[in-house]
Amino acid sequence: MLKHLSIKDFAVVRQTELEFGPGMTVVSGETGAGKSLMVDALTLLAGARADSGMVRHGSERAELAAEFQLAATSPALEWLRSNELDEDSSHCQLRRVIRADGGSRAWINGRPATISQLSELAGFLVEVHGQHDQQALMARSSQLNLLDAYARNGEQRRLVRQAAQHWQALLDEAQALSARGDVGDRIDWLQHQLDELDGEDLDLQSIEQLTVSHRRQAHASALASACERAQGMIGSNDDASALDLLRQARHELARVAEHEPRLAEVDALLDSAAIALDEAMRQIDRIGEDLIDDPDSFAEIEARLGRLHGLARKHRVPMEELAGQQARLREEVEQLRGADDRLQVLAGEISKAEQAWLAAADQLTHSRQQAGQSLSEATTALINELGMGGSIFCVQLEPTGPARPDPQGAERVEFLVAANAGQPPRPLRKVASGGELSRISLAIEVATIGLDSVQTMVFDEVDSGISGAVADIVGNRLRALGEHCQVLCVTHLPQVAAKGHTHYRVSKAPVEGMTQSAVERLDSKAREEEIARMLGGVEISSEARAAARKLIAV
Image 1: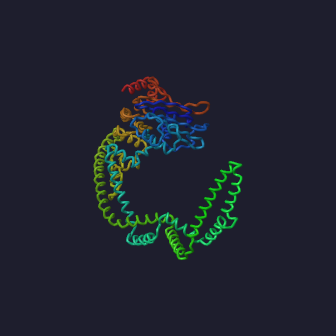
Image 2 (image 1 turned 45 degrees about the vertical axis):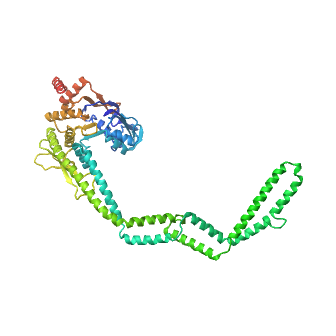
Image 3 (image 1 turned 90 degrees about the vertical axis):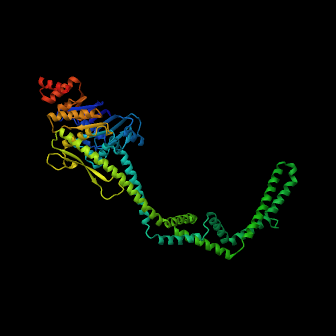
C-alpha cells in the first residue's frame, strides 16, 4: 500500500508531500490544474520513460519518491530479497531523479537500481489504469495471467510447466543423438584413433622418463667425456687431484692442531668433504657405466618419441595430455555404441511425456474455459452498469496448434469486446477507446476482487464520458474496490469524488510570475465546498452545497 509520495520540481509542482491510507482516495481540481501529475509521478516511479520536459522550468532536476507498506505475503518482498534490496521487511522506498538534460537515475531502498529493476518491482506494488496507459490489460500474456488468477490455476499451471520442461528435455536429447548421423562410421573412425593411442604407453611418468632417457642418449658422448675429466680432477693419482690436495691440507693442519682447538672443527669439515668427494666419484662411475653407446636403443627411444609427438599434433593436444584425449575418445565410443538403444528408449519416454503434458494441459484448458465464461458474464454485466450499455465482453481461448511442449498450456487468451450493440466482439486492444478501457479495467478489477496481489490501484479519469446515474455506479464500484485494496482515483465527477474516504484537491496559481500547482488534503468542510464547485461551477450556490452534502451522506 502506498503510504507517502514526494514530488519536487516536477512539471508545474514545486514541492509537495502526500500521505495516503487505506480505502479510496480521490483527486479533483479544475481542468488544467494538474490533477494527473500524481499519476504521472507514480508512472515514472514505475519505470516509465522520462524526458527533460518533465522538469519544472528553471530547475536542474525533478525528484520523485514513494514509500510503500508491504504485507508479509507480498511478492514484492520476495523480489527484494532475491535482488538483495530488502533493507526493511515491512516498507519499500522508490526514488527517481530526472535531470533537465533528459537523463535519470533510480534507487530502491536507497541503493542504485536500473530502470528495468524499478519497473519489475513496481509491477508488484502499483497498477495504473489510465485512458492512455492500458498496456497491461491489452497484453495477451497479462490477459492469460489474469484469467488463470481468476480461475486459481496456480497448481495446474505448475504441473503443465513441469510436464512441458520434461518433454522438451527428452526431445532435446533425442535431437542431439540424431544430429550425429550415421554413428557406425563415427565409431570406426574413433576406434582407429583409439587403437593408435592404445598402442603407446601414455602414462605421464613414463613419458617424462622417456624424455630424460632421450636427452641422456643424445648427449652420451659429451657426458662420458665430462665424467672422465671430472674423475681425473677429483681422484686421479696425480698430486693435483682434489682428493690428494685435500689429504695434503689435512696433513699440514694436523701438525699444528694442538696449538689451535678450532682446527679440529676444520679437520672434521675436511673429512666430510673427502667423504662427499668419494661418494661423488662413485656416482660418476655409475653414470659412466650407464652411458653405454647403444645405437639401437637410441633409435628405439627416438622412434617412440616421434610417434608420441605425431599423436600430439594429430589430436591437437600437448603430449602430456594424450592420456586425457584417450579417455575422452573411449567415452564417446561407448556413448555412440549405446546411441541407437537410447534413441529407441527415448521414443517411448517422449510418447509418455507428451501424454502427460496433454493430460495436464487438458485439465488447465477445462478450468480456463469455465473461468472464461464466468469472467465474461461478470465483466459484461459490470461494463453495462458503467455506462457501456449493449456492450459485450468475452474471453476467447485460441488453441496454439499441434501439441508441443508449451509451459503456458495448449491455448492463448484474447479479451474481446463489442463496445456497441449489434457489433461482433473484436480484440480489446483494437477497438476500445481510452475511456472505455478505463471502465473495462474497473469492471475486471471489480470482477476479480481479491485475486490481484497488487494492493494499490490507480484510476486516471476512469469516469471520462459518463455522468448522472452511471457516474454514481462508478463511484460505488470504486469504493467497493477500496474495501479490498487501496484505490487512488483522479476524477472530475462529483458523484465519484463523494465516494472517497480521502479527498485531495489540485489547484494552480501564478507564483512570482510562474504557474505552480498545489495539492491540498481537504477536511470535511473543504470537501463539501469542492464537491459543490464540481456540481455548480465557479459560483457556488446554496443549492450546490446542499446537493454536495447529500452526495457525501449517501
